[in-house]
Length: 176
Image 1 (cartoon, one colour):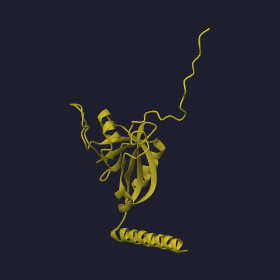
Image 2 (cartoon, rainbow, N blue to C red):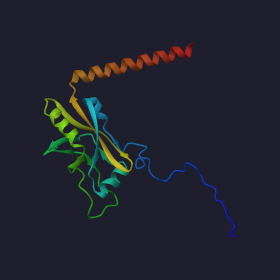
Image 3 (cartoon, rainbow, N blue to C red):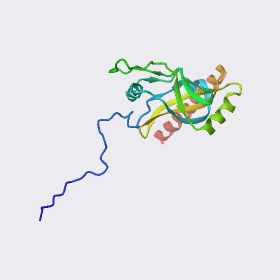
Image 4 (cartoon, helix red, strand yellow):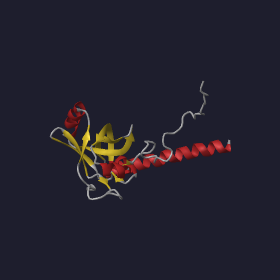
């Protein structure tokens, strides 16, 4: 009879400890911080993105910029324009163009809903963040309405007042 050996196993072992946090989905690949400052974000949608291989590698390294990007519905399809994904460092002749137009994958019902809303005056589609979900790259697109300058000042005032109130409460707790 053969001798049985047991190997110690480690429960909850991470699949690849050297994998980047962006690629594993722990951290966003890119966030559009100006979106919340320049727009009222009314409704958010999750969409997949059609990318080439070198684009995916650049997104994994975090070399994306959504600052000037926006969404557009054309011929019943949703497109992402002006999204900057830097060319891959180790790419060859097949490297991608940094500012090319990329197709977003979203359900038909959501596209119909967005067509009706974006035709209203002042509403647009703004990407707020790009992230990994189950190994796939997703973009969060928000239906947004532009803020006026006085709206931005009001938001800043409210934020400052809230911070001062929190600070006052924490100072009161320390003295008590």
